[in-house]
Structures are given as structure tokens and as C-alpha cells.
Image 1 (tube, rainbow, N blue to C red):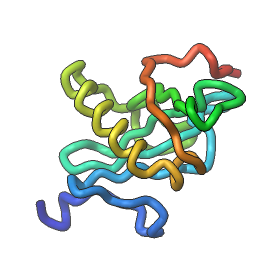
Image 2: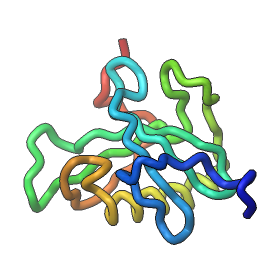
Image 3: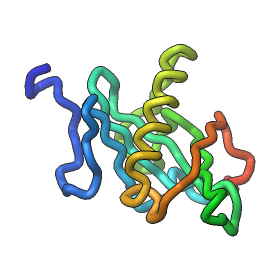
Image 4: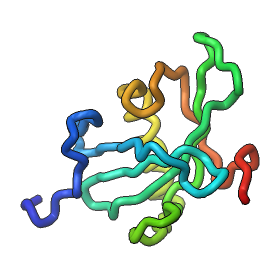
Amino acid sequence: MNQNQAPDYDRSGRFPIDEDGWQIVDLNRMLYPGGPHALRVHAPGLPAFHFGWRFSTNSPAPSDNRIVASHIGAKLGGSPLPPVSFTPTVLVRIQERLRIYAMLHPLPLFGERITGVDFVAEDPMVEIF
């Protein structure tokens, strides 16, 4: 991979780039109004894409502090980046990579440790205005 092919990583130093070149960045905003928190993914061989997350319960406990990830590839409200669609096979690989990254680097993304990641296509627990 040459410099022209490298993902447009966040260079703030807050979000690690893992050994496979994946980086997930907390955008400090909602994916869309009333939606889940927004994260942007940079990974070799994939276009930059967004997804949302929320805690699975309103009052997480140290022994059960899971997040729910949703809307993988969705368009971030106000972003020039288009939505991204993935084949089912690629989506499964992406979910596994996102799970690993989130479990290894929870503090910069969620502000606390987590006990797991659940994936849903659309999240009925977030409000759409």
C-alpha cells in the first residue's frame, strides 16, 4: 500500500491504529438527529464509513456493560461521505473487526470499559425525528 492508498486516518493520537491498519474514530456527535452516537471507520481496502452505537441499557453494570452497534455504512448527517453498502460476507468480516477493535480500545470510543458488542442492522431503540 502506498501513501496515496492509505486511509485518511485521524492523526490526533486519541484513536489507535491497530496492526491491520484499522482505526475507529469517535465523532463526538450523533449519526443523525435523535440517532446513535457516530463513529467513523478507516481501514485498508475499504472506503471510510460510519456506524452508530449506544449502550445496551440505560444503567450498565460493570459485569454487563455491552454496546449495540448499528447502521453500518450509514450516511452521517451533514457529511460529504456517501452511504456505503457491503455484501453479507464482507459485513460479517467488518463486524468481527469492529468487535475486536471496540473490545481492545473501549476508552477512547465509549469513555469506559465494555463487556461486549451486539450488532443490529437498524436500531429500534433510537429515535428518529
